Length: 275
Image (spheres, one colour):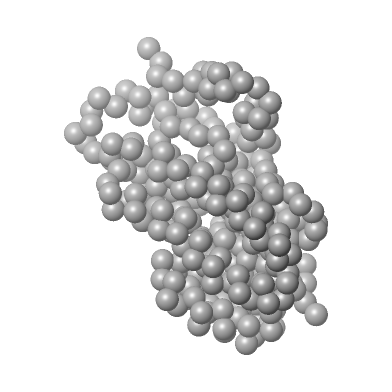
């Protein structure tokens, strides 16, 4: 019997790439997204079911899960992928923007996980796989709210992994570094700005050049992340964190193996104000 993965945020990027990858590997896929009508890459088939799901509307989750079970009979893995990046100066970020960042990236993930746990407990098996971010471990400027949501998600998953081990349910974290998707364009569209905050102008210009250099260096692909997610869903190990991207691992190594002062100095060398 084919295994089944339930994916949130599957309309593009990592979610879409993962849906396609798992179908190729012989899995059934429940690909959920807020607006299925806005994409034409994923379509219903014997192995693939596309459903409407907004992680900010937990009252709809049971009906979506029921539809997935009616189609495939069981769910073996949940991929918490839905999310977005609220970037910009913290001082320019509104309370509404902060609330929505946590509503999507954290609270929505918690609630869809809660909704699927009874199914996993009943079958005494399951994988809960969550996409966090490199900035859930190593922060950079202008992502304070996004990083806060991902740090929180990291803590949730780490703690949850212990209690769910009693139910033979595995918890996995995927930490992408620089990934070639439309994420950068989306975050630019959501960038928090306040024209009155001119004191930051010089620093913002400096960071714009720094980040151009970082993004121009390339990175992993969404398919690379999908392959790592597939590994996490199948390796039957107790591994919690899976890092994707050669740009991220050296910084994590510095954080894990050195002093906090040394780690912070490495980041200050790149991100501290110049001049």
